[in-house]
Length: 286
Image (cartoon, rainbow, N blue to C red; front, side, top):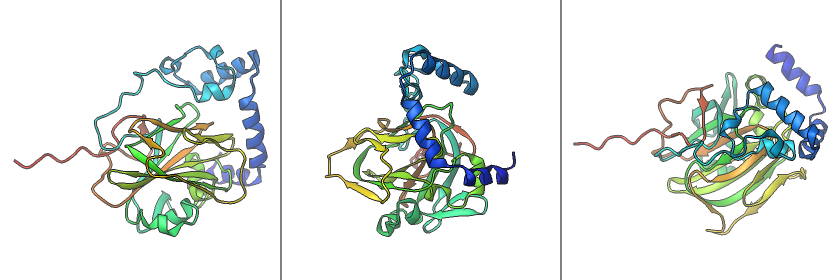
């Protein structure tokens, strides 16, 4: 199917209704029926259950429990780096923010202000900074972890559409990640503020964080903000910060400074949670 036809079909789909239905089914504790669906999903998407803390498909009471399954403690060792990759997935795009413009795909950019829900003051924090967009496919591990130590400053719910976030849609829908519903999590770190933006998509039943629980549903019609006192929520590098109930995309924003991405990173490259996301420090002069 061509990218254009795929995008046209999405315009026609009742995306919100479909997402609500699939979310309800994914939460259902269906006994043998749930186990049958889980086993089919494992075969269809070649999910590696040897990494799971519990590799038995019958151990999960619902599809959501399976989809957000924890991994073995030794499955994702943490690299010695300033920034860690927060998820398993693929690199959609990454690089410099040009002023306030973030590169989405050939011919498409969007502004940091649009991404964070119209907060221009917050967007200015990331002017000429760095971004990375990571896509989680259905087969991936769907918990999201901290790229570095961070103290939560603010969480913003931004209502929006529910397009797919796969590469074909990123090429065909302008401003995709600033159009879909999303949860913006703003932290303070050693190198200044940074943001992790959890982007919803078609069939993504909900998103949740470790400090708030399920953020959606309900799908609030207006932008909603939660502010946190200094030190109220502090998470260590590598700690879980949230999860997708069905897969999607994470966009990260960092301020202009000394951080740089790992030289081995490239668009469409596969990544794993815990690997080095930042470049190694330059050797000290003799």
